[in-house]
Image 1 (cartoon, rainbow, N blue to C red):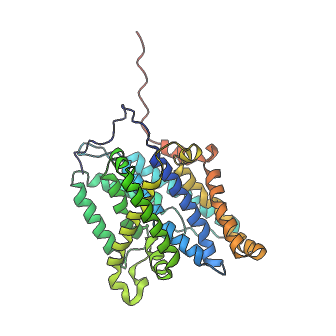
Image 2 (spheres, helix red, strand yellow):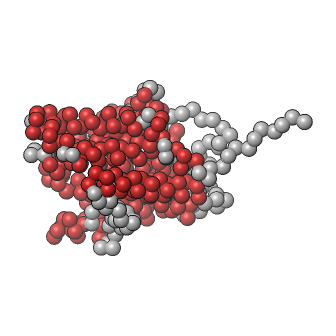
Image 3 (tube, one colour):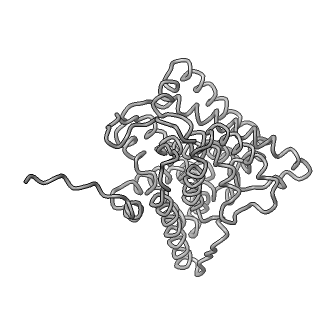
Length: 357
């Protein structure tokens, strides 16, 4: 995966591509909405709408997020040093977040529920996964990038058959989502921009996105089966006698996520949208804090209070609107702690300017 010369060196200053910041804003907003409405799918008297919305979101948001992360990973070759500070920073952020969530649970429910191996409901798997993705890219940096990508897709399709993979160390989700990271790594941001912003691709993207949403909101069977596939954490045994076809269903899930994700990039504008674009540059701090803010609402049964007081429809609307508010709150500068500080650990400081003699 070496001999790549794309992306400018740190000395050069490339114009910022606002499309990807706008896409990151949408992705992190969908992350917050997805975690926000998960409780509705469990508690609501009429959960179909939120189940469909959950499926539509999970088919796009993490694949898109991870694709963009790979897209902006600096190219590595034989001379590239191991990205120690980045790998350790992501692992450290994940550990700090898991501790924070455990302390919050201990305070609100009297039990921490911390487990070193079990990643279920910890919402930190993505942080550890990115660290692992960087390690994998570095290890295979001298191999043909497209061959590595093809193997990753094959492994992702086969992973659901392995009874040893699951929530332990998020191994199943790492295997499932790795291809999206590697696919982004294989491309150049500026060249993709030309494709995404072409008129024919924008029209095609809009049509595909509408078709995807119609599929999610009108086909209950699709929602039941692909909701569990899109999360990336379920083995094919969930399909019972049809488990043998799990690999083919994973291939279909990959295709749907890629088409939906590329469609989102096609319809989003490549211009500065002010606070939206700026928020798209703060996704890590939003990811860190949003669950800590949503968890008390779950503990105190806020959704059920809404439903009992105003009915299902208004309860859905009001509870979903909490997500944009939490996203905006987490984006303010004070919540850059501790992710900003952790990311600075071990980062090489610029050399001081020469002094005149």
